[in-house]
Amino acid sequence: MMRTIDLRGIDLATADLRTLVPRPVVNIEVAAERAAAIIAEVREHGSEALLAQSERFDGVRPTQLRVPVEAIRAAVEALDPQVRAALDEAIVRVRQGSAAQVPAPQVTQLADGARVVQRWQPVGRAGLYVPGGKAALASSVVMNVVPAQVAGVRSLALASPAQQEFGGLPHPTILAAAGLLGVDEVWAMGGAGAIGALAYGVPDAGLAPVQIITGPGNIYVAAAKRLVRGVVGIDAEAGTTEILIIADKTATPEFVAADLLSQAEHDEAAASVLVTDSPELAEATASALEKLVAATANSERAATALAGPQSAIMLVDDEATAAAISNAYGPEHLELHTADTVATLERITDAGAIFLGDYSPVSLGDYAAGSNHVLPTGGAARYSSALGAYSFLRPQQIIEYSRTALGALNDNIVALANAEGLPAHGEAVTARFEQP
Image 1 (cartoon, rainbow, N blue to C red):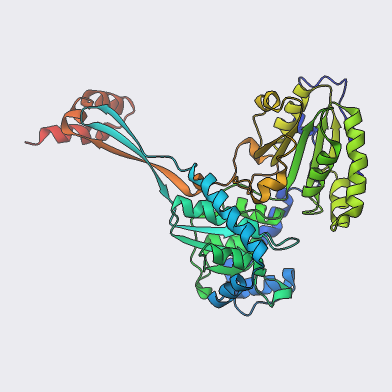
Image 2: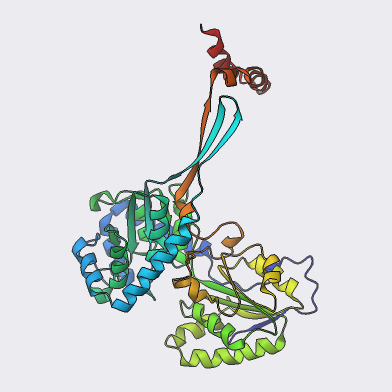
């Protein structure tokens, strides 16, 4: 089912490890062309383009783009009590985890009368994207909304695709999660078009543009976020899911197989990668995976993902090489199943979220760990991070100097200004001391 890449006995010291790790054939650059055309349609034709795109991609034309508040309330009332309890608990845990991400203001006193204050200011309005295609990710409502609320964002606009089954509304569990969190601005729109609509606004629908767009999605959503970056901020290119597991001979094959499968069921393009120095574990995991795939509800989708070029079992010589492979890959989700996970962790530098040991599966992080499941994909973990309260905050420096404190720097400022050929900079300082 999964191919095996055998790197044992190969000198990888000077190799570009990024060329050795599994990657999908379709990349974000290819998707960007289609996403750009979709965004252009929305900018030119507004709500009509969005309605037509829903009809084309989702098989239903919503009666209106903005979801009525009554529909949100009805979804909350109809929510299964057990699902509501699970969402309530997730909200509590993610709120606690997000609260730890808000930095406290800092005051640096450089001299008498000379201080710089560092404060963190939330954006005024955020656009939150929640997928609804192959899976209705109500948990993504929690992961987007809670950190924004903790950061203090005043205005939230949530977008999720229209569902044919529900008369052109987003999935009712997604609406219910929004209602539980007090979000009443929900839009029935999905894909690249929704990202464009949030970034540029849709005046004829009453949708005001946002300052930042967050949330996971497929490769077209990730491509669209890349295209609008600069018009708005984005969290990261959180596209199709991926998991990489580093495991040694002490790992439990059934656990490793179950976790590889848990991400493969998301999408045919999902990536599942096992890196191990144990051929015995590799064989046992592959055997366990075949049995699990045959029995799971999303068997066909998972089998396609596991057999794809983005998935593989990689055999390496040792744990240090496994860690180097992982760092080059920059996985969205990284699981460590080794005899000493703490020691393995010390070798890891690049990953979206890291799960340690037998009882910290990615599924825990997807729903209830208190961490955030909106994570960078496609290697973006090498330079970006998970969604958090900090994603909605901007650091601002506030400078306050007295006359005496400025005077102490007068000569320095004039000297540097003249050296740069910008004498008016210095004169702006000296002018303050020429006045009576």
